[in-house]
Length: 504
Image (cartoon, rainbow, N blue to C red; front, top):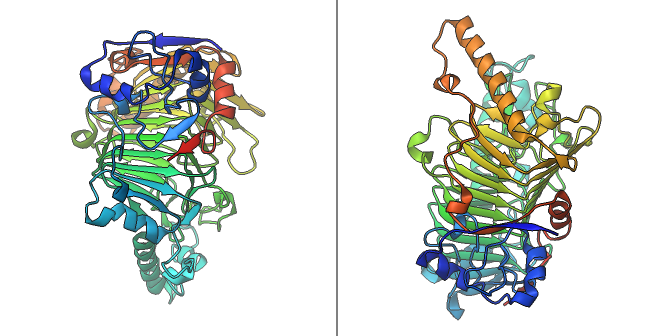
């Protein structure tokens, strides 16, 4: 198992973060590397490398700090480290979790919360689990769909006598559901699952205007939006669900590590059919970062069986919120059957390192059909003003027609750099794939502008470049695996919850 080390001069702020993981001795470095994959270079001569966990020999401790990636830069990220005994909690219900987050009236003070078992976002304090009819008695998605007319193009309260009522019920139900399932994580919080299956189903976890938040060893099943909206003017028509599994809005210094995120028991393929004859999309993002979120590391996690997986930035026009921010590191994750957005990036300086991407054109619920086959699936999405630094990722794509274009799709993004990645175990020219996608996208946009007699978008005047204007080794220290076998092995055996032992 070989690795490459990237170091930079250690500033006092970064050095203090690495001391927290300094318990890995040189003799234990092999275990740390196996359990953590891309690792921080030693902060002190003679010290063994600390893993992204950091593992301390395969262990999660509540006071751990993010050892590498953007979350380790600046003030670093250690969540509720140092919280007093009165601010350390064990919870097993939604009501208990919300009380712990309130932290005895001081929600922003350091706190450590252990999740024991599965918390259902739809569960009330008296133990009832709410469903569609509890949130909006009388709502019927088939009736709602019928009010858009036979072609699903235009809503009218007069299409049927029940349409006005269904419109009102859908909005009421959505608002009631939001109040119930939303969980907001405040600043200086560490949230840790005690077991392999500890975590959340049906909850909408939001990190809103917070700083210094850690989530580790958690299993998260995306919430089902009973009141997803059909938008006939969104392309050829599209469903827009409201609730992400986990999202960050205007927050900074976040570390999400050894977490599993998935649609789980409720694939969209089994949802009711929409006006377009396709199943309704009742899930939004798995892990979305928006509105100036900054300094984030997502490490050693599993994301699978989902459509709109990870979005960075919410619009090309949001340069005032996102420009110069959205600095995110994706290190050592396992992404399988995600269909798109693994991630899709706008504006950000994003490091995608040693991740394992897996897909098939034949998956029964989440097939990925590449751009080269005329589909819309992709793993990495290079959006407007994005600067993605892709490094030593392994892409495995199988089934009839599987081709290399699945690796990258351009969404107006012209700056992309890959070093040393592999497609089906062989060296791949990911930069050429990214360039081809950008140039095709640009040609289509220029042709459309000429046809309409309108000015072409500004990005069509830019040329594709592998100069992304930054290097992660200048921002933080890390060590990378340099073979596809090592990347696969880590993803298959050392990602997600239940891999490391939680020490309290």
